[in-house]
Image (tube, rainbow, N blue to C red; front, top):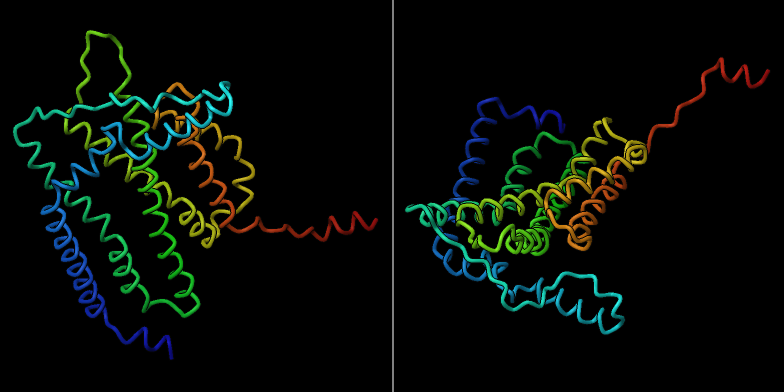
Length: 285
């Protein structure tokens, strides 16, 4: 009966359903983009440019952590100086229309993040009629887990990766004659890139699970290439946060390595190879 119900919709019915799915998704993006555009000045001042100031929540927390470690033992003074109240990144605009276009593009990207759960729901609603009940149960959790991991990755990018990268690059000085100023376009490119990259990277366990379901990946792969992965993740962490101190490097490396181990946990174990009949006869002999 279930197969018959799935066959009731014709090709044109599926095409019509796809059209309405795209329409609802674009409408949701449009509505949220308008709302983001209306409140973008407050969002820009209190959220997007917050890492440019010394009172950012991560800097304050690391300052308190550093002071606590020093009080425990002077040998624990290993963290960079986050208690500097003079830290401030000056953002300048060098193109006439940059502020207006940044206002528009940032509103779109923020709307894309905010509507991500709804967009996933629309995708699920479109493909679910073609699935069986056991497949629906599995895929439903996949979409839910993927959405949570995406937001968690974006949060790690905003609260940890981007501020640490910005703090290092903004305070790095090649010559005292060079005055540090950051262009608006450069700041927004790095801001959006690091946050969305971390959101996508945190989908690695979900991708690994899907590849495992397709029989293309098993847990033995992660065990075999763990050493290679550690080296690769260290290089990736050094590229994302080009800092010389080990603390800043570990802030990015440990979440990435945690994702690697979490991915290994979600995939299937390698298949057990059954001995051949010839091998069994040799063992008996």
